[in-house]
Amino acid sequence: VLRRRGASYDLIVLDAFAGESMPWHLATVETFREIAARLSERGRLVINIATAASGDSPGLARIEASLLQVFPEARVFLGA
Image (cartoon, rainbow, N blue to C red; front, side, top):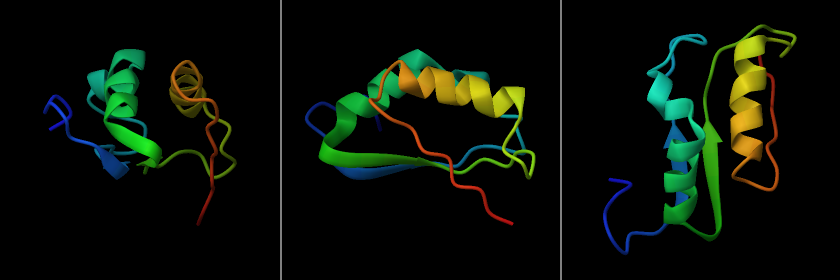
């Protein structure tokens, strides 16, 4: 879907995670660049991932670091 020419989306949801276990290629800078290329000017990427309740985990930190190489900001919202 991401490689379709001309396709542009206002919202892309990435929800392929089982805890912090995921298909590794979905959390790479390269994948996030492909996603960014398909987002409209004001589009958003939403990622659903389970992590430590405190939000303090190496897996989440790695994903956030990769996101910040592509996007100007990344926000983490913790929920029960």
